[in-house]
Length: 206
Image 1: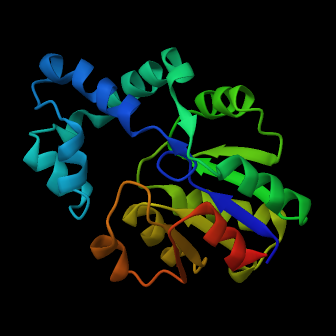
Image 2: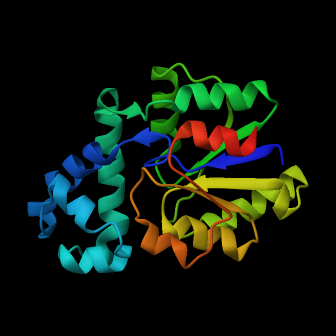
């Protein structure tokens, strides 16, 4: 296995605060509840739909609101950082001949801006899933283009929607504990690996 595909937000990028600020920026306009940091912690083991219900977020307006949130991200990208140890982990994987891809529902431009800002040169490709729940389609296309069997790719992420997407296409999943979703959400989907630090991720693969 020499191909690793990473989720971006919550896995590589510590972007929860910027997304919280973006969420709160549009709360009054779209009539849903603002959040504070404690809310993110308390809802780690809720599904996206359950969180939406708790904060009265109109899921049917997601196609309108999400581009605004990603635009806010772009305008404030200098405030976003990678998690500690991520750059070193990516560099080491690259040195060990791993091909590194990023797949995210965030805008490709946003990701490339942050990679440039953080001087990351180890990522070979950035892919975007235009649908929040459509990553399995992109992964399937990637496997076909690279002529890879599902077990030759590892997906690294922090959210249950990512592992569900991987399970649909039989790609093994590595869950990182420092992101958005809690272990209760992930456990029932049976990730192949669970790690708690970037170093532990390296130790698992190298």
